[in-house]
Image 1 (cartoon, rainbow, N blue to C red):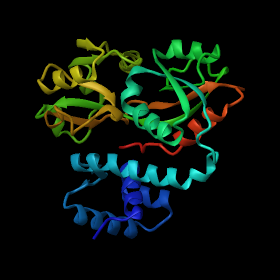
Image 2: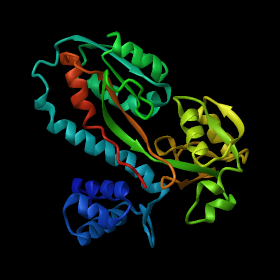
Image 3: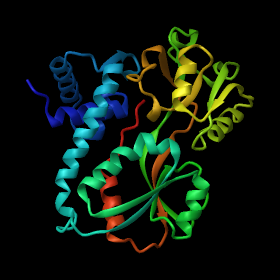
Length: 303
């Protein structure tokens, strides 16, 4: 039988909460309903979406792959339901000046921007990619309407308004077969002496250093790079480990089967990605529509 939207909703809820009980509470339904829906969905797909363990459920590689499609399907349904919230005349033009930081551009913005352009083809969208500090300067100066960026290091919160789109906990990336991969729990003390592949884009390096400093440890940096793909290759070949947000972990990528990710979110705060615009700004019609559409693209936090 074909899977249903309700099964997709339950699946995403379990992926987000990490337990059936948490998903049941979030959805205000019984645990048995969640369990039965996931079981039927796995039978329909012919793959295991979760691995069961005493503390809850861990999403599998196949589960990660299916989650990408499930969230897109649910976002599309939500967008279809909201179509009448948009102005009837979608041929109306206008301009939207959009800023984005480099990491966010490839992992969050692309789908959102494609959906916006389909919904409002007559709006001319200008984009600029730069670091967060400069984007804040452009937003306050009125040169940008909105930016999609990391919110953790937002500096001028009095002048800027923000809304979170995605909360992404940190994971530890390990080469397949690494000694730590067999542990149920990994503490920061287990990581600090390991060679670290440091991603230097989008303030991730600053965030990682601050996190390690909080544990009184100086990171042993083996390699610094602005390329996420370079990090994948270096970790996969055993050059070191990496501490990165879940949102950029791609088990289906070229090096995906040579990298294992382990949850360290209990030790580290999560990365927040969201929308930022100038506080008190009179919202143009293109900007209002962009903010409304973006609200339908919230991504679950995986645990």
